[in-house]
Image 1 (cartoon, rainbow, N blue to C red):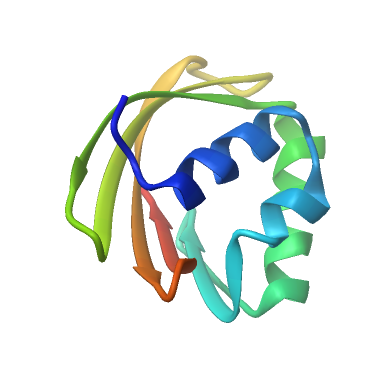
Image 2 (image 1 turned 180 degrees about the vertical axis):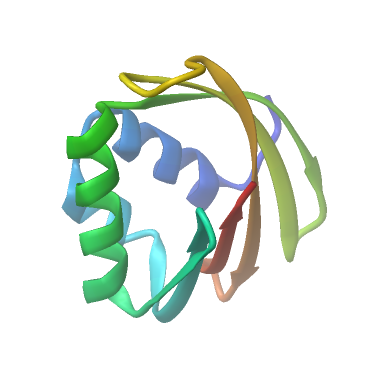
Length: 106
């Protein structure tokens, strides 16, 4: 699947449950929007990611990616211990200077 390396690194680190590696893909002031909440900065993103992992032990498997150098949509099959699992979610990434500056999951 063709996607920017930083996004591939995000999904690989997420799949290994490696919080430090996940955070290394984000810019310092990055924003994550997920489940009607906004998380800005690496400390808030770490808290969001760890809370989600602990609550549902999810795994996100990328299915396809489309976009350009700055914005990429990745559809992923997300499985875990939550009602309705598995589901397909779109991860909309905004990139700048080789880092994720915004991630919206819907």
